Length: 205
Image (cartoon, rainbow, N blue to C red; front, side, top):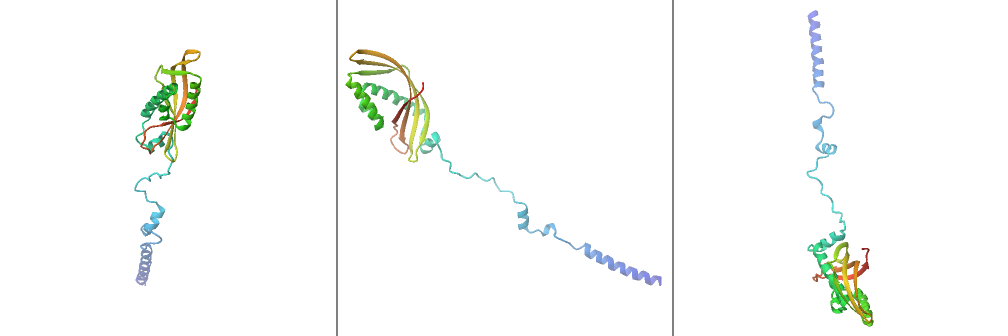
């Protein structure tokens, strides 16, 4: 009887152990390797291959940057040296009443103003001669470029010169110190390298 009971219990134990093994050995629920590749990519974004390049926002250039963008050969030092030469030439030509020289350097509106002053001086029987005591100082004050590639550069001039004038009342010598803002204009796409004087303003010394 005891032997029979032992056989029965052994059989039941074997059945229970088999069922436990069947349950424990089976994969229950979602396993890490069961996750689809697409879901893994969504859960953890892949690192970019390279840094994103900044987008071109089309920022408009202004001032000297705009001038150089349209004319890469533009050089500020060379321009200011030319502006100083033009300043001396124009001041001397105006004093001497040299209209042909002025027409080559002045815009029509400025030429008209200068011509009126020269005509007034001539009508009074006066003559004038100018001598620079020191080379004028020239500093770039402002730079602008229009959409039509028309550049305008304003230069601040400081100068000391001696004016010798002669009129009905006799001769006079006058030492002057001036501060002026001269605006020069040029189409940057033009083959003509010359700048024209388009505006003159008084400035603080």
